[in-house]
Image 1 (cartoon, helix red, strand yellow):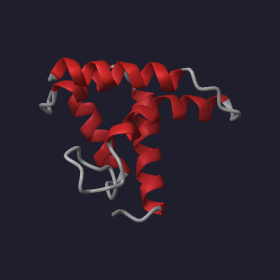
Image 2 (spheres, helix red, strand yellow; image 1 turned 45 degrees about the horizontal axis):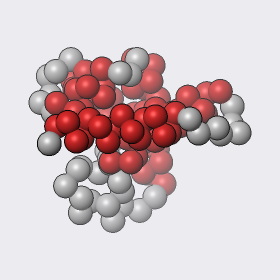
Image 3 (tube, one colour; image 1 turned 90 degrees about the horizontal axis):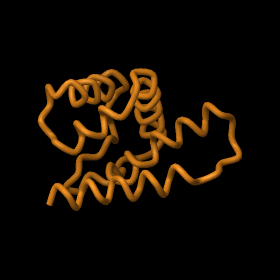
Amino acid sequence: MKSLFITLIIFFNILFLNINFSFSNDDIDLYRVALPCAGCHSVSKGSSIPSLCGFDEKYIYTALVDYKLEKRDNYLMQIIAKGYTDKEIKKLSKYFSSIYRERNCK
């Protein structure tokens, strides 16, 4: 089961990393790191994968750092979090806390 999830994450990363957006370099970087997250963590709270909807920036940041340092136990999230720099984690936290503040959570 773990290998299926890892394969899917790698597939989506390859797919999304090759998309050419017509935004600034900072925006491209943000979309590059955010799209794989959004692929699993939808706005729907009915999914088996937790939604990021309703979490504030500090919570998301702390959770990602804890996964990166293996303080939180989820094999796939540990692998994913280790792939991000601290700057990228800060961008992700800010992005997801702000975008879901503007949308209604289901």
